[in-house]
Amino acid sequence: MTEERFATTREWKRLVEEFQKKSDRAVAILGTTYLNTHLAHLIESFIIDDEKIAKMLLGEENPLGSFEARIKAAYGFGLISRTEYHDLVLIWHIRNRFIRDMGEGSFNELDIQNLCKRLKIPDEVILQEENPSPRRLFVFGTAILAQQLMYRANEAYKEKREPRENFILVNIE
Image 1 (cartoon, helix red, strand yellow):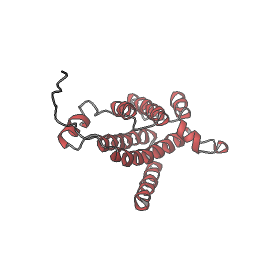
Image 2 (cartoon, helix red, strand yellow):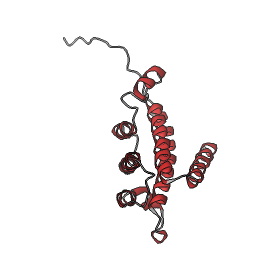
Image 3 (cartoon, helix red, strand yellow):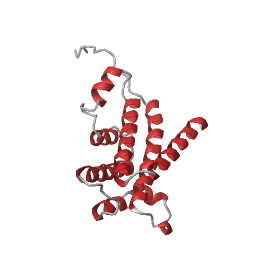
């Protein structure tokens, strides 16, 4: 467990360091891509061990292939908390703003600032006196969520689904 926690912390630090070098648009798109990958891993940790089924569900063009679908599925399966769901949905909306903007996009745009300020997880962890920028809220929220999703995947694996026994016709006489 200690080694696993160390790997998670190392991954989190790497993500934050990588984001420091990127543009706002790159941070938004890479951050959500990173979370999307962790959501896929979380769901795959929970569903039955069948690689073909996992690909049919989680493949890019399949039912749970999009970031939005994975967020909803993870919450619907009880794999993430209400707060995690709330922040993942906000991050999905933030990413969509950057994707729709054909320019570079910026965390300083008012609508993006407002979305970032509504993130709950950074608000619970960052000190009030710090007054972080919208970009910092996004980066911090993304990093914390990524770490949390890794933890949730380990939990989900312990509750991994098993296929049901074969159908047995029950005599109701």
